[in-house]
Length: 225
Image (tube, rainbow, N blue to C red):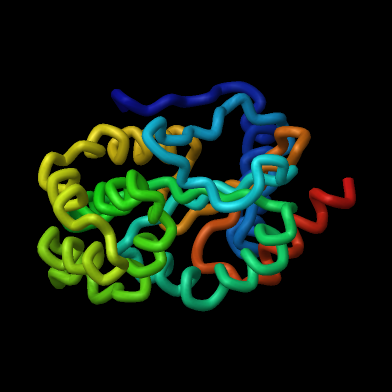
């Protein structure tokens, strides 16, 4: 039939290898993470106008969190896991984290990502990030509308005129789109996805609102090698 590729030779061997690959994928998905053994050649992208880095420049391990402000699982990670991860590994100089926007639920998701970057211009990226997640409501219910985001800025005492002008201008729309493209290129297909990079460049991936112990297991394995 047109469009179908048929393999005439070595069918049994191909099927065997196919079964092995599928089994490995199933096991990795069940555990919630997959180790990538080859060193990464992909750079950590930091916006030029401000740093969304959390942690020390000298931290040997980098975590890229590809997240979305309206994503319920991202909210669960923020509420249930992040504080312990930061206390044990970020505040102690072992890990540095970056939040990489992977906005896909709709215009309010993009607005929230832009708003956090606007807050970053005033040195309050993470404060806005945390406040937004603490205010998270149902997807596309309007909780992250531009009007509400401006209210968040006022609540954390930003210069609201500068913030509002930044948000209304869509100044960071290209950066938000590029962040999504970067995540897709790295294999991100849902949120939250965490890419954990060791000092040797090898990566591990965690998908979903994993408990602290899942991060601890990977970080300690990196530190021990």
